[in-house]
Image (cartoon, rainbow, N blue to C red; front, side, top):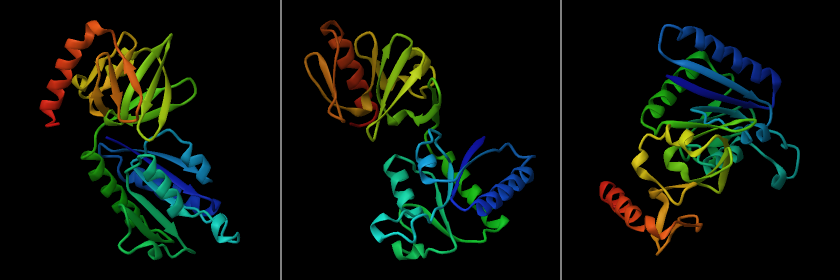
Amino acid sequence: MALYIAICDDHVADRKQLERLLDREKDNRLKSDLVLYIDSFGSSEALLNARIRYGLLLIDVTNGLDAPVEQTVNGMDIAKQLRSMGMNAPIALCSSSIDYTAYGNPPPDHIIYLTKPISQGQLSHLIDVAIEQQKTQEPLIEIRGQKDTCNVTQTEILYAVEKNNLTDVIMTNARDFKMLGKLNTLIRQLSDPTAFAYCGKDCMINFAHVTEMQKNAFVMDNKDVLHFPFIQRHALKEALLKYQLRHNR
């Protein structure tokens, strides 16, 4: 089992300390079946631009504390952005200068407050919590682009369109990703391929995001309209009904 962990701390010494603690935790778990992958970021921009779906995030960003209130950015701001992007993993806001309890105590939306310095025991417990949450979540699909990689769940995919040797994967929260390869590269990774169907020759839709079936098109929940040849209508209608019956829709 793999757990991807992100550190985002704009204080270099604190960031390095967290890296050391996590390296020690990796050593402590060598005899288990858990593999820890750790990425470290020095700014919120770098973290928010990362494509990896992390299973645990440790954040301490206080840049802008001397700026006007409307220009400050802290860990809670980043956590809210991550949640809006569909990141539902545990987020630990680590701080020595911000009182995050002002945002709510207990913390909102499965966010954890930690005061520095963070102990090895606290970090180990966080990892255990993240592992248990990951076990109950939908498995991730890895889609590779020309320069980077995106990890998403099947549920997050609305539809995908193949063009030449690239596949444009349209996802929830107005996201999209250009995947190297054809549609069958994506299909092989789906945990439930019956939730998807070809809509035309080069497009694949996720029935979970269909709001309406028209005469020769599907309307998706992001308002996109995807057309298919009329000859496919009967088979697609039948497949959609079977999906809806399985999922009580």
